[in-house]
Length: 297
Image 1 (cartoon, rainbow, N blue to C red):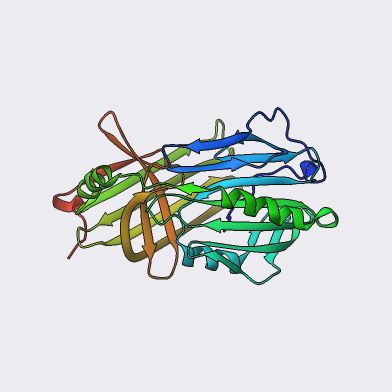
Image 2: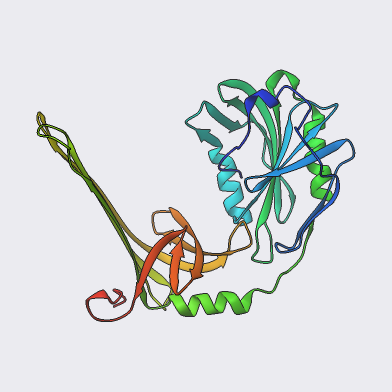
């Protein structure tokens, strides 16, 4: 329901958001999403999220967008949230369906190594647009039913509108059908004097997108080092097949989604600027013929 938490643990025991300004109706017209900030709460936008704080209720409410279906939200809830910074929140109550497109539950565990508890409510958007996740989180000892209530109050005020992006999506789908997308990156540095370590790195990714809806994917990278007393080489590669589509991502912009047969999913933001194609801000070369034609047999 929420893959990454962007919080500062020092906020969790306090009912305050610095420089909070936003109150009342929040309308993200481009996304077709609007809702009301409850009385007594104030919001501050930052890094793709809206963070709310209260002068009375401890902890924070974090509102983010996502591109999951309702079934994917349920699967994400079962996985919980595990990060390398001492954050591990696991499902600790039955997952409750609030409607055909919304589920909610409590999660307990640690947030940056401190005992924490949260109520998380995920809403899927039925209009092929971003949905939202609403999470109220605080220290375990400060959690109360008010945290669940504020999430549900925001949800009850939520309005999702259909935004017609069919023309833009169709144009992207046509542009990306039966093409090979290639990303290449390499770097090499040599020692300045005899005996200094030299290092090199190279990476190449090929994505063959076929008009029939399937793709072939190959990515490999290697790193080499050489110098007095150092001689090593390490590499890794990955490949897979699955189905691809162009959709609207969590920010309201078009994204390329690769759904691998093994269940993995890669999502890339799409941008075309100055006759160049960018996936996640990385330049990709688009080719269609000869030895650079896609493998779509």
